[in-house]
Length: 248
Length: 248
Image (cartoon, rainbow over all chains, first blue to last red; front, side, top):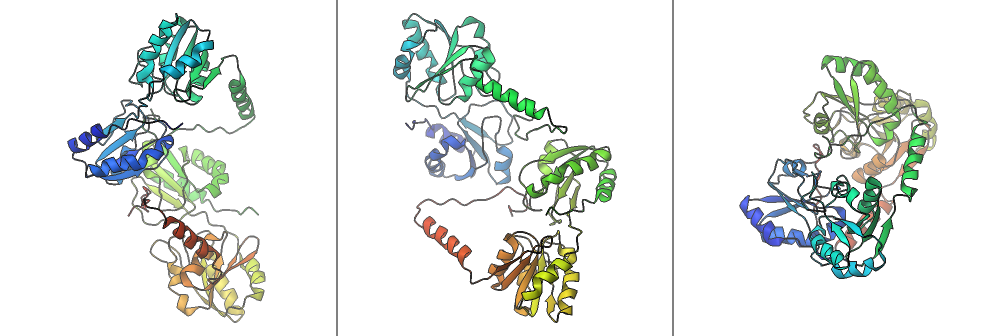
């Protein structure tokens, strides 16, 4: 099921007018590229020339402000992530691309067999706005819900990134396990590994439930195998990265 | 057969000392990456810290001086291409990685059946130094050899790039066809398409001969098919590039 995203057309147009943009760079993760025609139209409707920055982008650690400047842009629209506080050389607007669909019903169905009593709630920026409602839902079924204040690189309570699981770690000793609202295995797997706690993941659109157990050692075993193979080598390289938020 | 390359260790060390490098960026096309351990050792032997810039690199149009600066380098070593005259923000040395193997014997064998009388000679920077000897070889067999002065983006007589076929075009009306000394189909195919002339390619290491005829329309037919498919679309994007020598 393809979700609907809030592309905040009004805020985008106000920003472009505010910074008097002539040409705006558009940066968007691969999964959201189908939204580009709609985004390009919004920018054109604002009387601004759109320029899509097509390099891969995995987070707000990677604002393409320098490339946008090089291509003659005077503003940057970064979609799909919340502001991580990286200083940019161009006026930059983060459009979080929230999914404005209440996942409560799907989650309620998925939770029926869930045995956790004290549940930590985590999500990505697309769905974190809904965690309050999910907490109420859990409380109504006699469970305790815990949502952490945001960690250093995120903006919302319960929000996690691949590189910032603060919202899971900080409450791990107060919960029996975690409930992740979102898509993909990346974040809930990280949560279960980082906290050592069972993590259930519910896809807020389909209601599909998947489970991540810290004692399912498949992922860790593969990592150990890679390290063992690498240990046989005699020359090692250290990989660094030019992305502004990763080269610290 | 894996060729030997001249990595000019002496010139590299003199350059690094001359610019008082502390950390040197190393940029190299994918095909030459097996040479990295040797290059890294040369840099380390000079008392300089090596840093390999691992983004793909297809020409001297793409010096990674900005990325190197970002990673704290104070000099750049660019391998496999000749200087194209792009201004860089760091002291930059182009190491052309010539193949110091005389291809005359292999070429002589391959040419036995070749019917061209007036032959234009072209090559890449790795083998262009040998074109003079090949010209003599052709003259000895009663043929006429023509080598053009270098075009705008290259440094040596007869040298071609994927984007600079001046050395073929400029003599096309004076020859029956071309002889390309080098590997790969990219340059001789370009030559035959750009000049409309038969082009023979001889691999200087193996002696393998391949032939490119402008009336072999396979490549052009595929291009026409792509254009026909694109013509059915209603939205078009224009692809631009941030590589310094391509964004002009």
